[in-house]
Each structure stands twice: as structure tokens, then as C-alpha cells.
Image 1: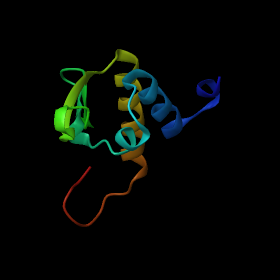
Image 2 (image 1 turned 90 degrees about the vertical axis):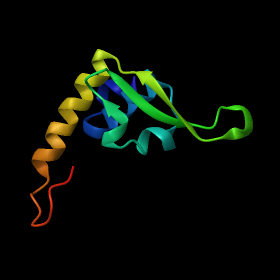
Image 3 (image 1 turned 180 degrees about the vertical axis):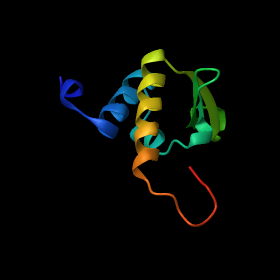
Length: 89
């Protein structure tokens, strides 16, 4: 299985696809504001409504996905050097 040999961001993305059943464009477009670790949920955009209006759905974040996202974010923030401008994620 490809997931077993994937590493880093690729592994987290594959896990997100599996656990959220979201499209690539929706998963890769997630923002920090779409991740609610306190309530263990993820916000995805959808057009699956009458009239095709864009709306958000909150989906449950599994413990496995929460752990993977947390570890990946910690590593990403360590790698990035602090900027001279305002602090951003």
C-alpha cells in the first residue's frame, strides 16, 4: 500500500483523503482556520447543495488524522525560519 511508504506531507494528505473523503482541491486548499483541533473537526467547502451554492461542512477529525496533522504542522513550523515581518502561520 502506497500509504505505508509515503512520508511527510504526502502521508498526511493520503490520510486526509482516506478519513475525510474530500477531493484533492478541497484537501490541498485547507487553511489553519479550517482545522478545529479542540472540537476534533475539519471544515470543507462543498457545492453539494440545492442550487449549487458554496457552503461549508464540518467533518469529524479522527484521532489518527489529528495526530498526523499536529506532528506535520510542528515539523513545518520548525523548518520555516522566522520572518522579519508580522508573525503568521
